[in-house]
Image (cartoon, rainbow, N blue to C red):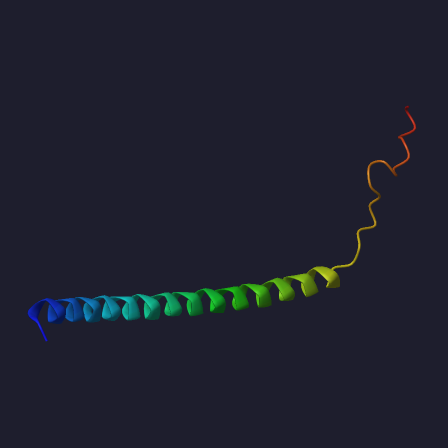
Length: 71
């Protein structure tokens, strides 16, 4: 094999090694983001349940309130 071909093969192998490392790093970042999404989704569900457990207010909305006697 000629030196030119060997140099091209070495260059391709270096590129592949860098791409494999980049893909691995991207996969790790994606996994971390998915874990964060899962945790936030769980927290959102907990907050929704807590909000549902809060009793409704006895105070009427402003448009439902009767005007005070001096009007």
